[in-house]
Image (cartoon, rainbow, N blue to C red; front, side, top):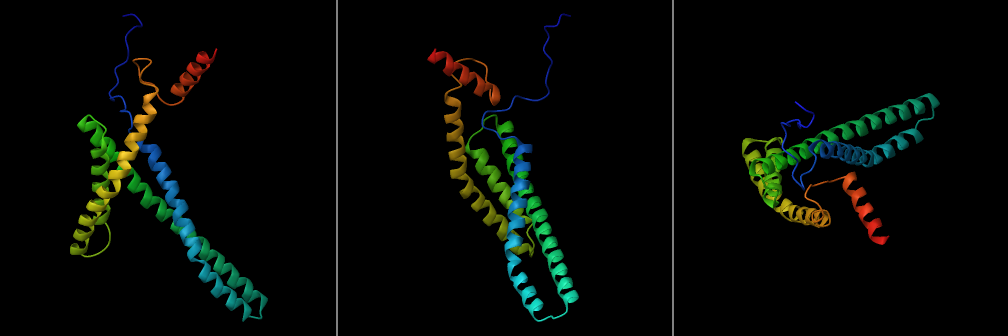
Length: 197
């Protein structure tokens, strides 16, 4: 009846080392947009050279302005389309990878290298399946994606877990409760200042 009862949460506490799925997806979308847009902008340089050649051979000023306007509109559309497609592709890949990694960590009850390898393999295989081509070509892409995803994620997962262990070394010995983020940084700073005084 008193105010000492704690609310019951339907969510389990987040495991150390797991990545926030939403944040990683947003970062993936923006990185894909930057990559896709810059790739299309670099590819449109040859198209700009063609427009310059046409401009030199056209004496009419109105025709030159029309050619320049058309070239700029086409370039804008190409870069925008590249940004959107790149953002969607990398965002979907990132969301699938980290969502599956966190799901495996939750279901298995431990965050280890096998979660990273399994999610990398499954995500790469899924994207191999949705690539265009015949059924035989897609089956090849699934197998190749599964193997390459696991091979690529094995060292990355190991490095990630070692970095998480290194980051958690300083904060685990002082108190029983686990803190992270800004609160942990403030507490470490306070501890360092108290030691110096």
